[in-house]
Image (cartoon, rainbow over all chains, first blue to last red):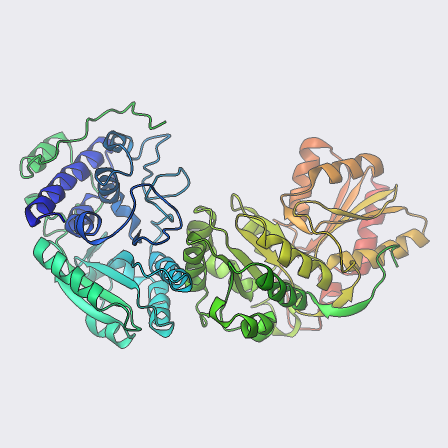
Length: 289
Length: 318
């Protein structure tokens, strides 16, 4: 079991990894990656049970799907720090011949990734399929999936939201990154999401809410969600986060959704985040083979 | 009609799918089925009765069905999705592209009511672009069987093939002429009749139309080599090149748009490896309409006489 301080320190390092990957690539999506850093740290370093040797079928282990694939630099940092591959490989993010594609993919065989994502709205369906397979196999482990909030504007999300309670999928925890922002601006301006808790409840989900940038809230709510599994209903956690969390000038705006910090901005951002576990050595020539 | 391929009855190709699915369900407990509110049309009730826990009704939500299938496949299941061809492809193209094809998922996309022969429901449902859409996806296998027996055999065969497959079949009752015990080998065309003047490459319902055309052509003294191309991708290049090298010209015949179908694949092959006069029997850049299946085929240029006419034209161009 990791302590709260250890998890917070991991999340801080992960935030540094995100910023450095996006900076060196000169592109990518730092905003929501920073916002969801606490959640993924909690999942991979405390909540989920899984083997470091990657098995595509995820049999008898907890499985995570990232539906909002644009926050790949976060997931790559987490997977590397969790031991799925060498942290030096983070240097190859978005480069030619890399396994770390702009959006996550299975095509290059990156351990930890089970389905490509990036075209939004698809991950919840995939997670439901995995959850149904686990039930068929008598596998009592849990499926987790993260979606964005702008992503909820995709119709497929609501097809999936309708189907999970119908099929009594109760080994699934969906998490919505409810940061209120998307590329073109605030959700409310782009396309209002309405009363999200009421929407999910009316579809038949158990709805929880948490502060996604407070590690204590994240841990407690995830544990609470796990306790609510097995009741013939899926669980969704509406997770309030701040896009850009951890870097003052990236917070409170959608402007850092998909923009890389330049050298000066990187320095300014890293100054706010302690190097807790050691930065990955940047090596643009790194080859994983 | 064609030696070795006597017509033994009449049944829809979709019945072959339903019966094949039931059989493959018996053979392999990793096989699961999903349907988007078209159980009766896809003829899968026998699978559902036998294996209720392995069937997932998804409702009228095809995008979700494709995603759930991808998730089931990730866990090692072999999902067969069932809906009309229109809703199996165009409606869910991005879901198939990202969650299935790009992600290398072992999903079998099984599509009924393809093409004009869906009939009276009209052009909203008569997809004639699906082969093109699916064959463009890297790694996707595309199969278009010709009768009940071949559809059943194909359904069973694709369960043993790892990788995404698009299996396309149809609605109307159709003559059965392929042997019941035929081996089905993905990517291997079947030489149904040797001949020396023209190669006729037909797929799906057009195989029967080509058989009828061969009868007419032979009576006119044109010796036809008839090949059943059940797999459009991967294409049996060796068999086609060998045949066209012998006959010197060819005709393709399909229930699909000219642009993007079997004809396009064969034209690319011949253009690169063995240029030869070629005629394409297909729907030419138009939507269909309501009507009886065979009448629609005649009206839209994919009837028996269209195949015969194309063969004469190809021979004349040599």
